[in-house]
Image 1 (cartoon, each protein chain N blue to C red):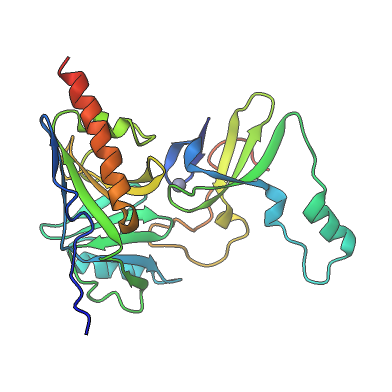
Image 2 (image 1 turned 45 degrees about the vertical axis):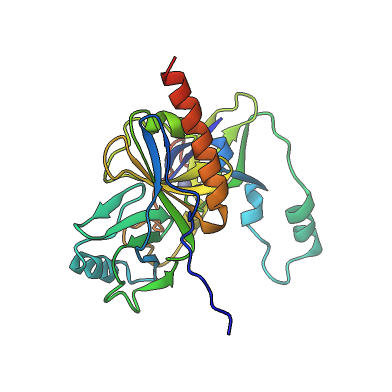
Length: 108
Length: 179
Ligand SMILES: [Zn+2]
C-alpha cells in the first residue's frame, strides 16, 4: 500500500502512522451536549467503500494527512494536509501550509 | 572537575569499506533547524538568499559553495554549514549540530545498499533533492552530494545502529557483486 503525501509524494505505508477516523479532527465545541461527545469518541461507521481517516507521516515530513480511501478496493482516492482544513493565515515560504485543492478525487 | 572528552557521533565506528563501497563520517558543520514563524515566510526566503541559499521546496535542497539548506519536513528546513545570520525573528531556530550523525555512502552500488534499508527508489537521486524517510526503523534525512552518492543523517543516539545496518547491507551488496 502506498499513500500520496501532499508534500513528499508517493510513499510506502510503513512511513505512516494510522490514527483513526477523520472525525477526530472535528472535536465538538466546548460545552457541547454529551451526545456529541459520545458520537465523537465512540460512534463509528464501518463502511464497505469510501472512508476517510487520519494518518501521520511519521517517518517523513511529520504532516498529518487526511486520506480518503476505499475499504473494498484498497484504492487511495485522495489525500490532503489536515492543516488545510479551514486554515487561516500564511504558511511557510513555500506555501506548504496554505489551502490547496485536494490532490485527487472529487470535490466535496 | 570532570574533564569531558569530545567525541564525534560515529567515532570508532567509521570509516568502513566493502569492496569499492565506503561509508565515512561527516563532521564539524553547524546544523540549525529553521521553522518559519507565521507570516514571515517571504522575509525568511529573502534572508536566506542573502546567505546564498533560499527556502527549499518540499523534497529539495539548495547548496552554495560552503553551505546548504535541506527541506526536512512541513515548514521545516535544516541549515547546514552556515551560521543562521539574519534569521532571528523570522524563524524558530534550534541548534542541532550535536544531535545528528552524518555520514556519506559512496561507490558503485551505493543506491543498491540503501534499497535494502530505505523504502524509496533512490537510483535517480541527485544533487538538489532531499528526502525525509526511514532507514531501517530510524528516521533519516537523505541528500546527494553527487549522483550515486548519499549523505545520510540519523539521530545521534542511533549512530551505532545506523552504521551497523548500512555496513551489513554494504557487505551483502559487495558479496553479491563479487559472485
Ligand atoms: Zn510527507
